[in-house]
Length: 188
Image (cartoon, rainbow, N blue to C red; front, top):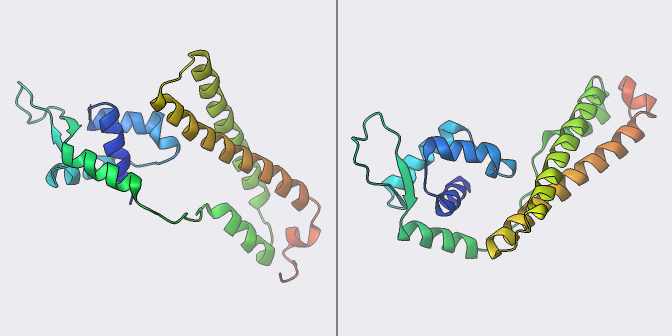
């Protein structure tokens, strides 16, 4: 599970409260690694318990107050260890291609409308990423950290471009397959 490492990364970028982390996940990290607010808070507790992060000292009693967390040296070492670790690529687990495969057996039914909807969602996300890229280019970002972040953004742009292109091709091809639409597709 990579969530603890996403949290360690975010906290090394900027010490934050749980609420701030969830907002940052919603705005940036969540584009490529999503987590619910509950998952983030639960993982913060685990990271604190294992001594990888700590709540920053506060002059105000913590009961009922938000805690801001920072990464401890052990947490940074763990993140460095994870970055260096070899890992096999994982297949994507988007259910749409599986649903399409099933439609080859049982018929498209309402899947075409869903494919059009997905195409629109991917196109919107692609435009959002390109907008971020234009904004960042205007700022002339050039630090090592910014260059790495730009690479992550490029990965998002390329993945969304793939989905838009693939969905355009799939929709175009499926619109001409009457047998699949009626549920009489031949076995593959």
